[in-house]
Image (cartoon, rainbow, N blue to C red):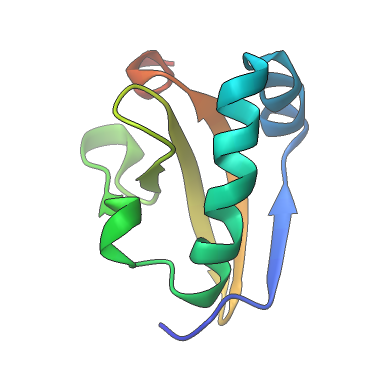
Length: 90
């Protein structure tokens, strides 16, 4: 996959993003340009999820915090949710 042209955000993502602690929001905002250039940059630790979430991917904001996304068309993704590993259990 080349660079990402468009990122769409679910209402769940937007709500949970604004609830993040400010330092985590700031880290996430610094990761987004890296993601746009290369969603599989090693610094993001991007990986495909498994089980009932197998159509989704995740990348790391830091060790604890993750962003879950879905590829929706060439060069476009949907940011679905953000949070700790608990978001995988929803």
